Length: 279
Length: 279
Image 1: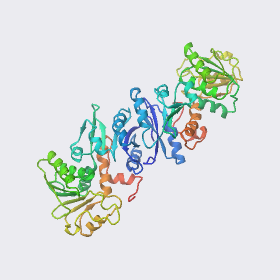
Image 2: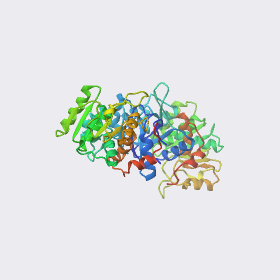
Image 3: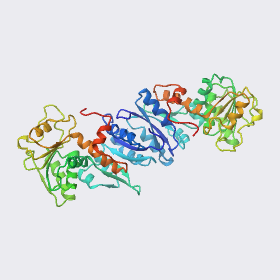
Image 4: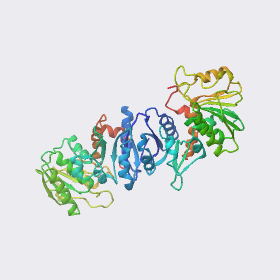
């Protein structure tokens, strides 16, 4: 129940119609008696820099969730951004620190890594292939690097995009072995689809599935179906895997900690969420 | 339940802690399945002009409720303000019109007049004394004038404040008889306390109670108690009256109509409100 003491988490993006966060966070806040609310605010690109500054002047602001099309822009508008956000080149969470400075972080990749760890998968020292070096692929690569993988290969249709991410990784993690890879998953412990392939019927698989070993952990970012064609194929080959919504729900505890709110598990959040998948 | 399709009513004021509107509107919206939400936003005076403009750029903004300390400032920030807001010199509701212009209105006084009419009281042609010519007194005088009273006397401790309101009334209602009055209620059909007297224990009564006739209708704006000392004295003398919260609840249907939302009665709103009075 929103009252005059309720603290706001501004959910900034445009358009707002497909926003999922209010349907996950707010039922959790209700259940736990946390006096905060996620409020969708449909902010267009041209208004965003000014609005971001002013919304953080509100006396009852707690933080902001940043989504399309503002994740990249946000990085340049803050006083400080985390290493994850710098490597990712985008930011999906903003708050004020104790000195009133705007600080940002990026939790998409954190959700991915938390999903792996929760399933008992080894991340430290592992060899990872990230297919797709856009926003979400960059965020996942950043978090895998932060979690201590030993080697990361990046593949993107656009070789310059892949190499840009590789260079950002190398800058922040000089000891990490990074290469521009291919769609061949052989030899990797972790393979992630961070492309939109699987959204549309008839999309080709994002990797060369015949070369996928049963010992490789397969991650998916597409949420259109619980079991995408890639995941069905991976399961058939005996691979362990995580679905697209794992990343979504696993990152929310990270956000809650960032905002200084009582946190919980991804499983709990799935239970209280007023939203079903696939959509 | 807030989702990506929910339209926002920004409740702009500072500080927010005592805001009542969210606890009245939001339960009503929930009950009626209206996909809108009132969100308190603690906006300080120095940020208000810029924030007001930007909040109305949001794609899902429906309107704004304006409260302390912004009601007066708002008048100068809009493209168009109603006659009530011009006479009151303050504005407590803002929306975009079909041409994208910011338009404002003032419903405090409307709530007062609706309260009278609902109780079957005559307003048209009546003689009214408004004690207190600040924001709320001005709003009530404006609405009484708009509703067709024949004569209005204004009293304020500060004679210039009283005369300022009298002049604004005369400018917009040249046919209306207006005078600067006193605290003597004799000869009036309607007497309104629009001062804070009654908020504090031991406050003097705002009018000369010995001169109050049983035929006079007494209105109160103080909400600290349901029955303020003035209302207790008026009831003892046999006067009809309205309590402070009548004005609060009666103005909400006017707001709902202004925002183009399904409206209801003040009594219904009292029932669904998640707030008790006195506070």
